[in-house]
Image (cartoon, rainbow, N blue to C red; front, side, top):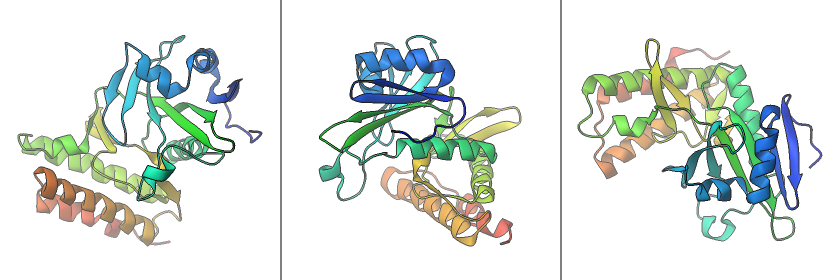
Length: 254
């Protein structure tokens, strides 16, 4: 891989494995690659905490600096997933996810920083990839706020923060093609909850405030919320849903 790296990142290689990491985490990357892939090492770690989501991810401390990260293994979705599994052609989705996360952060969208990704060569041209992001502690996904037993005031606050996140995505021209109630993470802020967007490898950029971006983001998230209501008993306030659906109308096209 000879492509240029973002400023502040370095490349580390060990046999069939390569990692791209923040410069201050170069020693961590070397230590991880010496023991396996990022995901394999995280899964074996006694200090790891499994996280449910799009496949099991692991929160654990890096071996040298102790920085807390969440490591996720890239997998295909859709009908062909049983065939394509976790195999990708170069360069995989990992470099794109790093680039997207940096661009979103620069545009004011909250998303966990990608600290490192790892790629392993398997079966000729095929590759497997893992991504390590900075762990955002103390967070809960939007889905958890929708379940029975949650205080209505907290659920309303979660939706307010989520609307702000969607507006920031729209302003960045970022359409998230898998925006759902599990990849919106909410944490405590100085003036209430704040929302973070996860799984940004599914983001595509268009024009800021473009109708396709605004409608696409709101529609995708509303579909996910209603699916959780229908299949898992999530509590939804139609007023909250209508306010989220109105997000596309709060800004004008350029």
